[in-house]
Image: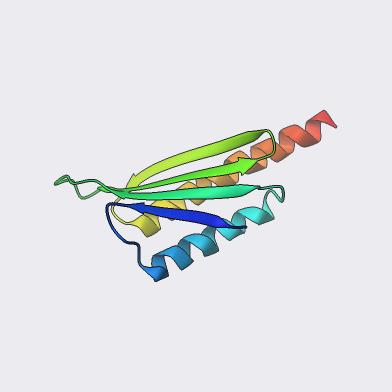
Amino acid sequence: MKVNTQSVNFSADIKLIDFIQKKMDKLDMFYDKIIQSDVYLKVENTSDKENKIFEAKVSVPGDSFVVKKQCKSFEEGVDMAVASLERQLKKRKEKLRART
């Protein structure tokens, strides 16, 4: 799956982009009809330690899932967002199975 990664107000490290790609690729195991995914990385200018925002939008036929997480590090945000997307995709797959 192709992951379009955009970093706002900073340039993302290649290691971070590879990490995101690897984690997002795992979503293919749960739902094989993913069309595309867009990832936005943002850093807020606040004194708060949790100033990194990870936002992911996953498009599937007829729907799209958006997850937004704010954490201390992007890696932590990726892990939490992928776990959330995983649950949503499993739920969607079960709904589709129930219809047939």
